Length: 158
Image (cartoon, rainbow, N blue to C red; front, side, top):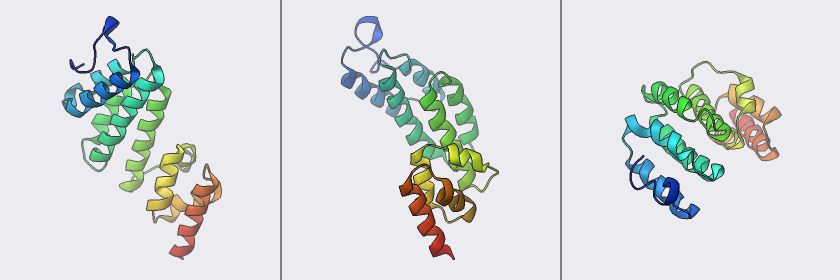
C-alpha cells in the first residue's frame, strides 16, 4: 500500500473520511501491477463497508477504462482473487464482466443478467439496443423503473 493510504495506530487513520480520501488517492496513483495488492489491503480496513466502497469505486473506474481492452480478462482475474472475501466487490466485478460480455457480444447467460445488481440492469436498460438484453429486463428486471425503461426501449425498437 502506498504511504498515503495507511497511517495511525495499527496502520489506520482513526477517521473514516480521512482513510477513504487516502484510499481514493492511493488508487488514483497505484501502478496497475500493484492494484490487486492495494485492494486486498484496503479490504482489511476496520470498517468493512468503507473499505469495500473504496475498492468498488476503483473497480468501477478501472473496469470502465478497460471494458473493451484485451487486458480486461487478466485484470479481472487478478482483482477477483484480491477481492474474493468481499461479497459486494465480488458482485461488482462480476457485473463488470457481464457488461463486457454484452458490450462485445460475447456469450452470456440471461440468468446472470437477471441476477445482476440494479446499477447494471438500469445501465443496460438505458444503453442497450439488443432485444436479447431488453426483453428479460422488461419482463423481470429488479425494479419497476428498470422494467419500464426496458419496455419503452423495446417499443421504440419495433
